[in-house]
Image 1 (cartoon, chains in turn yellow, red):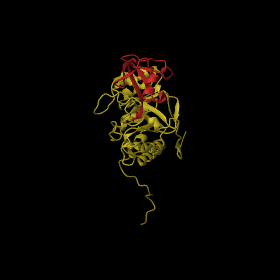
Image 2 (tube, each protein chain N blue to C red):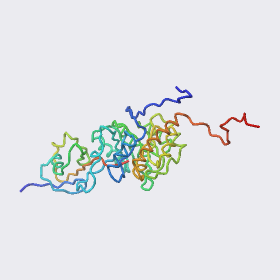
Image 3 (tube, rainbow over the protein chains, first blue to last red):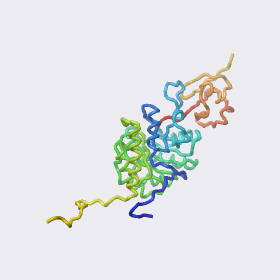
Image 4 (cartoon, helix red, strand yellow):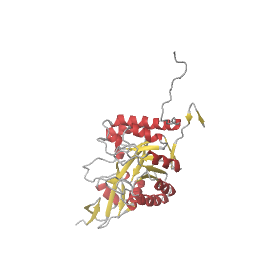
Length: 265
Length: 70
């Protein structure tokens, strides 16, 4: 239903049959310290928090596992397959992540190029098919190509995650048209993953009508991550509301806001 | 003389007592089995099976957990 006064009523974000309370999802990498990370996640209001799967450091010279810092009761742990360059490798990491015992969700990444971290879309579609058949809820990190997004949906992905711009680049939404097209053509949720640099990027991205945003470096590499996390929370909500409100038409000429009649002689 | 076998754990060779189980190995490494996931020769070994899974010479073990990531 739509009234001029209130606009459309928003619905909850549902991915793979599970309802999420926030449209902002955040990563846990690259923070200077864990206390800042925990406070930033808190300020972001995010429910979904991503983690990576890596070898335990048996010499204990590096930091402890994430579970020392994150409460799995409070946050939905979304494991990724970051760093995987083949479908087989990504499937292996996904299986390990699921065995940790938290949920069936996986943020699937199959990277094709070290410099740009662009996805290997052939490997991605292959891995998605395998994991879906094994009962995973696959959220696939992809580029902004419509056909790849459609193939990922066909493969049974629970969500498709086109990038705004390359991972860690902070360049913002480079191709709003393509992201909008993917959103228009897919039935599963579209979560923009990677590339958002600051609050305005997040707002513009949400204004395209996508279902959510996942970000990491924009918070972790901000001068003040906790403050940026709060800004992102507002930006995602503002962008979502603006999308639902329906923006005014663009015009190439000015139209006065005040009456043109009733002027003094 | 105690018999030992050589296994590879996270890429590094280690001597462990013969007839050790995966659970014994985790205990020797001071790791909580609930906080890690274990692969033996590229096959995941589920937690209930760690105690009954005996290690042999040349086995390759991966012990992983969640770390920060995006």
